[in-house]
Image: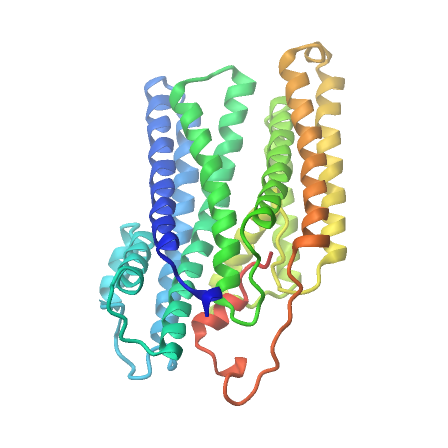
Length: 384
């Protein structure tokens, strides 16, 4: 069972993730206050908007998942009107005040502490395996919410601050701090989600830490950073590029709709989920249906290369005075270098390091049709 043990290191890393989450939001709020004092009201509004959108969406999904678990007869066989000691009213109040993720951190850290730091171990082997697996299910729910938050808040925030920095020559210490923690939060969300997801599903092979994790992280960060820089150049070229980004979001959201995702228990939440996946697909590729997507990924990254080549060329053609500047050469080099490195890491990861899935055949004892809704929900999470 060592492959699914929730260790002391994992418990400490959960605290590190909470720290990054809090500091990322606080630095963004501090930056918004600075813009407000300098009377940059549009930048203030956009900076705060990304923070609020990330908070709002994660609260909505967190509350919905708690309610789903409360109604699951395998998780709540006695039909109790509370879950994790919270009533429906208390649950709604916590999420209304934006404390949903903090509530999940509290329960995960509390239950994890009892398991990994308590010297007495009353569980038999099978019970111990189930306890550790439950902890990873809690961690996976939390990591999915953090992934949503990263792409709804940290990623667009990084794009906005790069646009302000490069397009308007506005720089400050708090701005650099905000960008740094946004990048750290994105990296953490990606790696933590990948590891928690695979450990929460017993029939999926776990990817070893070390080189495979590093290659995966380089693939994601390099491709995402080069794309964000390309979008930044397009925004510098014209603020109307936001219209093109909106159209791109609508196209990816429509694609998710055509795939008929069935992630949520209600129609309205499903539409919100598809809108969120549309945002994620603007910046990076994820398998949103758990199917073979080799052809879709190839098409996606061909389109990715077109954008990364077109953006610098358009800026050089329409604003030739920038061609010889250090700024233009540096950003262009980062875009092309990041694209090449990211795609090389992508190929290495999927050819050599990505575990080949071996799904179990369901049976009467452990069949997938009899699993709790928590595990069933996790199976529908974005796949790597």
